[in-house]
Amino acid sequence: ARKENMPNDNIERAIKKATEGGGMLEAIMYEGYGPGGVALLIEVLTDSRNRSAGEIKHLLAENGGNLASPGAAVWAFEKLDTNTQIGTNDANEKWKATTTVPLEDADLEKLDKLVEALEANEDVQEVITNAE
Image 1: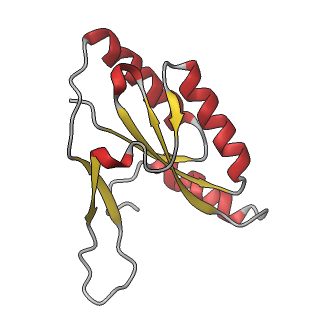
Image 2: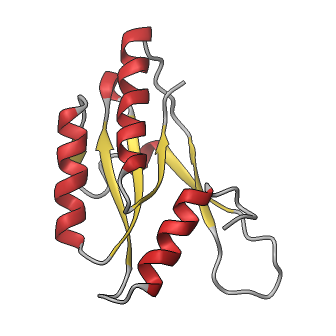
């Protein structure tokens, strides 16, 4: 995780979730749209799919966005294989925007607030947008 520049808070949250017991952790990719029509990919690591979906949906609605159906926003991105180790089967995949959306200052401020709110959620690992 450090090699991929994941924030320390996210690493610590993932370790804490894994060591505290409870249910199995599941990696989920939520898709949505934010202010100005920006596409969002929200990577989540959770032990409760239903709880996380509700929380993500609430945060999006509260900050001018909405949750989208699977496949509705991913079209604006391409998956990159960032695995540099030869001989391993599990590739670490990142996303890159293929189509970008220009935003006015007001929408950019709203998007910043939305991304901050999402990243403050303990289940969210990463938020990717296609904003210019």
